[in-house]
Image (cartoon, rainbow, N blue to C red; front, top):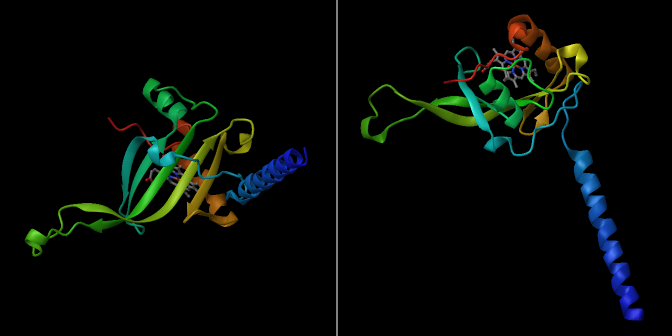
Length: 173
Ligand code: HEC
């Protein structure tokens, strides 16, 4: 009996310890200011909507991916995107691929270098009613950008992509 009691209190103690750990992990999840958006789990395995290339000051290669709801809406050409839609824009430095067989030739191909930012848009028409139904998050190495940067998101998406539910990216054939 004594032995049984000891075992069960150990089990309870372990249970409390793991519950505390889960709680700690939850509170440590990085959230964007203003919107409270997080980097979605598993986004790296999502389907891609389209690639893009920023040739201005940033010089980046990008890939926009979407969760299941996003892909369904894109394929059905159905706007606005439904609640629960999540779009992620991955970005990398754009670096030339040097070919050891011909180092004298100018680079023909550019490939992803270091990862720069991961940007997220989450659709929740009620929660984000004042920003077209979208919550925004920009992360660098898992850390959210500041309030000032997050104040720019909706302004630009609204000014330029309002007719496409504030989303720039079209489905690449
Ligand atoms: C000056 C304009 C501008 C600002 C500011 C801006 N974006 Fe965008 N965003 C774009 C453009 C243009 C695209 C199209 C794809 C690309 O740039 O590679 C885009 C694409 C996106 C996408 C992919 C879905 C889509 O709309 O195509 C996400 C996610 C995104 N932006 C998040 C953000 C977040 C988060 C912020 C603020 C921290 C932000 N954006 C600020 C212009 C802007």
